[in-house]
Amino acid sequence: MSSTIQYSAGGPTPPAPLSPLRNRLLVCVAAAMIAGAFPAPALAQPVTSYEVAAEIRSSVNRELRTFYRNRGYRPLWIRNGESGPEADRLVELVASADLDGLDPSDYDPGDLRRAVERARDGSPEALAKAELKLSRTFADYVRDVRRPPSVKMVYLDKELEPERPTAAAVLRAAAVAPSLADYMDRNGWTSPFYARLREGLAEHRSRWAGLPEFTIPGGPALRPGSKGERVRMLRLRLGHPDGAAFDKALAATVEDFQAAHGLPVDGIVGATTIATLNRGSAHHARMIQLNLERARALPALSNDRHIVVDAAAQRLWLYENGEAVDTMKVIVGKPSEPTPMLAGVMRYAVVNPYWNVPPDLVRKSILPKLVDRGTTLRAMGYEALSDWTHDARVLEPDEIDWDAVASGRQELRVRQLPGKGNAMGKMKFMFPNDLGIYLHDTPDKALFDEEERRFSSGCVRVEDAPRLAKWLFGEPVRASSDEPEQQVHLDRPVPVYITYLTAAPTETGIAFREDAYGRDDGQLERLASR
Image 1: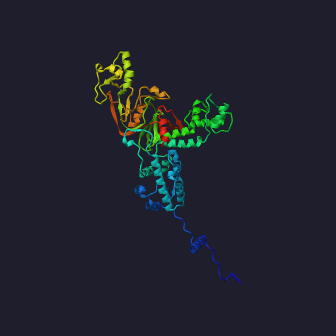
Image 2: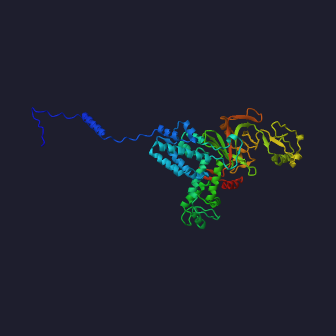
Image 3: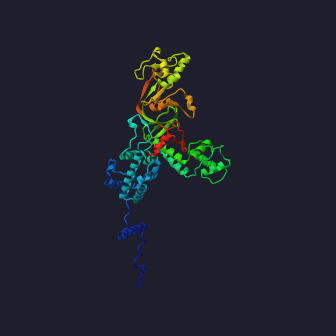
């Protein structure tokens, strides 16, 4: 039986209502009591870098131990208890290692992906295992990409010869990069030419390799509005539905094909576009692979300055802090006197240079002019020397046996004196070598207007020598007097790489260039036999 307290006048007074503050305090106390009676599960604590470092220290192998010990066993790939996009990028790279001429199975991308996935549970052990597997795989992959190239290149200086880096060196280069993500995205262990060619090969395979291939016969140029059997063949060749009309959709694909293959983008299928289509995607893929091999001889991204000359493109690039900061046209060797693939260290410039005339030009060009004009070498701006040594003396006219020179029995050294008409122009840039190859100015500026600029005897004529000199020395380079052969030494020598890329990256795809020096076929055969 329940009872009710009755409050009446003179009886017990009712309790005062609880204040809001006191009410909240009681609620908190009650909650604390309930929590004490029924403990809540502990919240997971984020994994600290110390815990991951401790796991790395206990399990790292001998090959990578020095690298990790020097950085206090801090992880390279794991940050804030998880792997970043760099790990995913590495999985992508090794899964597509066939683009590098390597076997993806050598790097087990599936196992690497699973290790990264397991690390997502956040345990120090799983994170450390993923970290070490990422580093081992990355080091193996980069070392294989950086293997010495199979194409022949002359290295004038030992320091420029490519060497397969150690695993520790590979990881150190990645660790000191300002951004690991950027380093991975840009393939920072390779040249920019290589990275873009690799990307171009992937795009080429994805976009053009799966299409039907057959020969489209020659004939009048095909353009929007054209009809007929050749248009039908073009449609099928480029993956369009059967039909006989050259419509807007086909024109767009033609333009895409032209852009991707370095052709003029006009949507018109003339002889050049037909020839490119008829070569087939396999041919173009092989050409990209060959030139990837050539590009592997070029230096990796770095802060060091260097110069790249592409004899096939007839162009020069100046690199600084990993970026091309300038470019200019060049004139390279004739097909009969090709500019070689070589790498050397530029150490000085020569102002007011002589030009040592090749002996065959003395016989074929200078001697006939002497006879026709009845003049002297000095009047033509030349002089003859006793030999090819540094101390050679200037010969008097009566000391020269021109009959012996004309018959080829005597090789006469003739040099052109400095001056306005000198073939070297105002200066030349030297990376000493026995091949007689260097970069130099030229008085024949009109030749740079030509599309094909193969006019030299092997040396490289530059479009703007004063601009190149200012980049090299940091200030304009001028002669201090009329004295010939004034040497100006570089405080920091600059490497020069002369390559030959008959497939090269452009803003829109890959440009496939004429093999003017006839090098591709032989090198393709050697590449295929590897």
